Image 1 (cartoon, helix red, strand yellow):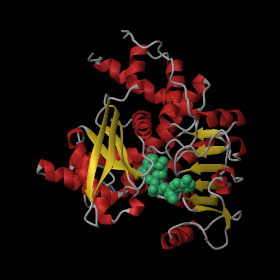
Image 2 (cartoon, protein in one colour):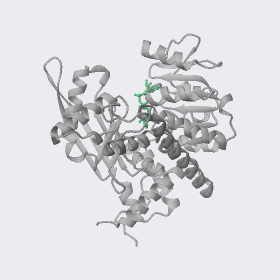
Image 3 (cartoon, helix red, strand yellow):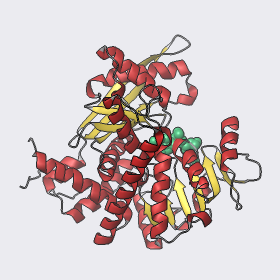
Image 4 (cartoon, protein in one colour):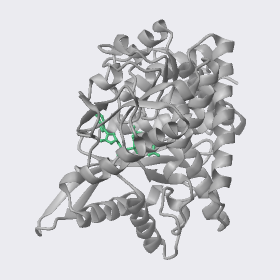
Length: 431
Ligand code: NAD
């Protein structure tokens, strides 16, 4: 069956106009993968578009008695495979294009790891650092009420992302439950344990990073116990990732956060650094380490680089300076499309975001399953299942890369897009 397109051409006009627009970056990779898959033009058009984009006003009563109105988004990219899934971020620089890209990445990510969800993402334009906890709670509850009609355990299941956490998820769950008049734990994942949260969820993305790093090291014949590793970002993904990679025996020689970076050739004592960072609010100033600029951290000599902070940190202007032979993308979208080409020429093995950080959504799925069963597994069981999923996904992507002679990123897109397209074709397109 073929579906015709009314656009000028099936693959026309979606190249990246700006290196740093994440939606254009996503479309650029999508286009490369779609061409190789010889995707039906109609299916291409459907997958290129987002299914639904909701923009809402979020009025908030501030502590000083005034009202402020914040802007919120929830974008559902594709719902063919199941309920949409994706985090909610609170940040001053959230844009609709960023949320669109993140939503589409969630569609491909879920498909790559075989989790039966579609892709979504949400955001509220605000600076949580400048807000009181009460203000954050009121923004969360009003935003939840505003997107109520499109979320739910069968529709769209949010999760934490940048600047949102277990507490924010608990408020969303409570607000949704109050509106529908009964407790619905499965409406969000990443909740506190004891409130429908899963053991192992907090560590899941960092643990998933370790699982795929182990496989990448085998492919590249790198002994992890002798490896030097640099981690950018020391939050949920980077902090826990660094802790687990350190426990594996590797030397973490550099770490950074929003305040700056640190470097120690002999290797950082990560458990002590975690304590330091909790106490001082940053890794900066850690005794025995040299200061490094936030930008230079990705250029430090090392075997493995784990960007686990934010988007566009490896770009055309610095990709050539990257020394690592393996990059494991803990963050979403840390490498621009132009940087990808440079890294590929240099022979760097990149484990792309939609595979490398999929541990989070995998255990979110396990949390949703446990909520719906009303029965909770021990942490070992959650970690065991996560390991099976991550190893299988890594090798499926690697086989795709070898078979089509493409890098791991395009291979991951090909795998994810092909799975969603196959699902859609089997259902039939209601048009
Ligand atoms: P977080 O808020 O817990 O931590 C972010 C860390 O990055 C902090 O240490 C912050 O100081 C640092 N940071 C921010 N901007 C920086 C910069 N310019 N330079 C250096 N450090 C900087 O967030 P997180 O949950 O760890 O998410 C990090 C990335 O991982 C995001 O791209 C997110 O979308 C992605 N991700 C998170 C999860 C998850 O389960 N938390 C899952 C998949 C992907």
